[in-house]
Amino acid sequence: MTCSSPSTRTLIKAVIASAAVGLGGLAQAQAVFKITAIPDESPTELARKAAPLVKYLAQKLGTKVEFTPVSDYAAAVEALANQQVDMAWYGGFTFVQASIRSGGKVVPLVQREEDEKFRSVFISGDPAIKTLADLKGKTVSFGSQSSTSGHLMPRSVLLQAQIDPDKDFRRVAYSGAHDATIAAVASGKVDAGALNISVWEKFVADKKVDTTKVKVIFTTPAYFDYNWTVHSDMPVAQREKLSKAFLDLNRNTPEGKEILDLQRATRFIPTQAGNYQGIETAARSAGLIK
Image (cartoon, rainbow, N blue to C red):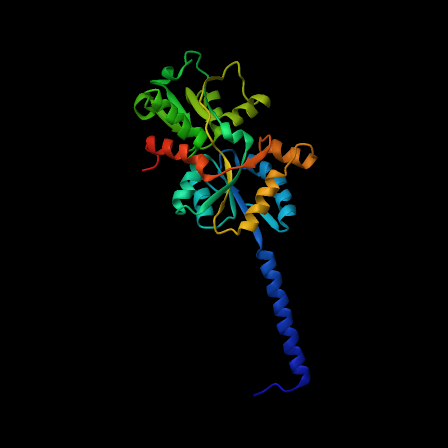
């Protein structure tokens, strides 16, 4: 049976056109640029830090941008390796893990200027603990097991000082996040803890920790740390647009200042995979990568 009626043909054309418009709208609605971050702080803090950056990137990319939180560090690695997100905020160690997990198919774009010479601190509320050696026989908390600044580099420093956390500490704890490590030390749940120096300095500046009771007992040597990373399948033009958006952030503009302050950054600078070779070496030496 054929539909020869002009009115029928017109109706069919209208339906097809409407469907095409609908599909086009659906494709447009699905064009969402998703970013995530390792959960090294509380979910509310991560969301607060992400909000103005998401808005800024949406303007620069000309597409909708969403921040997609993940439950743990491993989930952040899997999300980018499996291309469930377009970009991830990694620590040096999670970048190395993502590179291994993806078969080398992730690319670090930018890092904060501070990440060229990042550090970790050991803190304690016990007046008797003044050096790393004093940690022997004590309860000590790291952050997440996959944290660069909250576990890997502090552990590496301890091993270099001939202190094996698994043998020399009374108990090793993992708080999951830097702010949780501070809370564990401040409450006396553990004798000492190791964490990211920028989170510590932020807590001190905001008077969220009593520095007459909790003090830094050791600061690690500098190392490369955090970066924004994308999958290598992302077109080069898109990568360049993203990099430029970060590199253009300027403290002299209200928008730039807000984003940089929340990211605890002076400015963003380009980075490359080779910068994190030292992190991989440290992870292998510490037995965290087999």
